[in-house]
Length: 315
Length: 325
Image 1 (cartoon, rainbow over the protein chains, first blue to last red):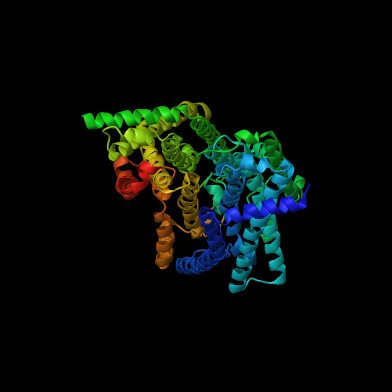
Image 2 (image 1 turned 90 degrees about the vertical axis):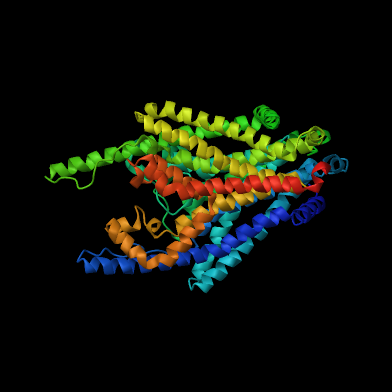
């Protein structure tokens, strides 16, 4: 392992990435949504309080019983909760694009043969790409973190404890997104064409984001992106509960949602007693780490198999 | 007649190219697999609702009371909520890949230069490609619907009536048009971008915003979605009371629905949800009543598609660099 070479490769990859306008486009969407998420959370919370007051007036007029405000015990960080969804949606897609660009750029520019004509080992080249990936991803996550801190300050929910919770949430988000970035990079360095590389990474993303939560928690694909709970309490059905227990270990997005909900103290979807007692926050965290390691190993395995003379893409 | 035959020849070539590509077999398998998963889960959820209702009924009877809510009723097309969601998401991705691959092949093989040496107009190319892809999406959607028709009686024990088949037919056409909108977008970008891989990434950025982010914002801002089971239900408000209360928040609702209106996906979703009775107040309504309510959404889908086709034609006509690809 040669640190100097790894750094040089990482620097080259980062330079390439920041020259790509399309990368800026997705970055801008993510940063914009990070900025908007707290406002959307605040506006919704503010409106629901006013809707409640109007409903109370209506019920009193008709001499009906007035229920307690349903969001009385909501966490002060509930206004940040939209970021959980945006990391799952935009963050992981941004990570996929990032990994795709870093994996494909040498191949599209036709420099794979040239690079391998130099005394650079495969592992150094791969580690250089991974270092670039981590650095850029860290930059993105740090930017979103600062924006969330600032907006939490604007809406008066920022305290030292809340700041710490927000930082923990972004650390988890970084690990979650890194897994997708490594996966996309693995496909981008080995697939026969650029479209397949992106498509296969998106397939995995769709299965993790939509299909597994539906199978395991009866969440409709678009329902899993909204603060609505499943149409039924899966825990009351033995079959649904059993499927939930079996699929949960593989449902990476649900592990992420579960830890994030716990950190930000917001409601998560119902989970079975078996899952609750088996998967502590630490175990959920370890599953996310394993997800990242698994994808790194996949990238390493696929990178070892490539034939430099045939790896360039002429698209 | 000769004009039409040129379009048909290009459409035929386009279809052959698509069917030769492995990518589409994988998309097809994914769509079929997810359709089955979705039907299976919906069926389990419905059975669970029936079981919960019967349990409550027994409990109430044992203490000498009668239930105030009606028993869950099976409307077979209601079970297709997940399938519609998948068409919204994966169908759009498929459209993007169709548009990209369609141009990618021409640019890579330089076949477009050869085609244009023949007496074929640029418009013929566009219309031929659109027709070929429309036929492909129709075949794909027919496949999905056949799978639904075969599976529904097996998993749900549900019997489909004539009107259900008509609704499924409309679903096939509407979904194909929806997928075609994303085809026109990615086709345009594949023409316009110097590095064709960038066209794919930009198309995904647009897809992300219109298919996922805008509907997500609209749903998140819905006060009723803030409480499990619904805010208004938790307040025990009747529908007229709910409407009266929300009448005080017209501006907020205008902004919220306005955000949703920008998304083509929401227009498609609203039409199909009404058609299948997933939006429960449309259960039992006639097609005339449904389209009386949803013509605006259908029009929006058609309008988005026409804009997409128009943009493709204009860009292709004006593109001086087209032959330099």
